[in-house]
Amino acid sequence: MPCCGGICYPRVSKLGTRHFAHKRVNGCTTAPETLEHLLVKAEAVLGCRDAGYEAESEFAEDDWRADVLAVRGDTRFAFEVQWSAQTLEETEARQERYHRAGIEGVWLFRRLPHGST
Image 1 (cartoon, helix red, strand yellow):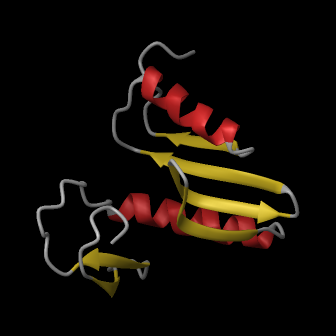
Image 2 (cartoon, rainbow, N blue to C red):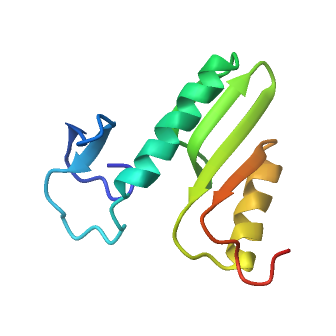
């Protein structure tokens, strides 16, 4: 698993979403993704592909990891499905990492970070 290096296995949710899960927790402190979060990521991948982009979930590079990375030519979008609470400062720091990498960040929030407009 990208979060902890632990062993994983492919799984299909009750809604038909294909994803990977920990075989054993192995001390991983990353909270499991909800089925709703996995579904939104899967829909983002499909929507990006329908729009002519190459899209992949859980794509990591250097100091960032995107829920979904969409690429077409030199254009790259990182989609973040942010269902859990996150501070405005953390959102801005993550957005800055994308900016430094030449990526446009696209955020899908359940609740906007406190202090944002």
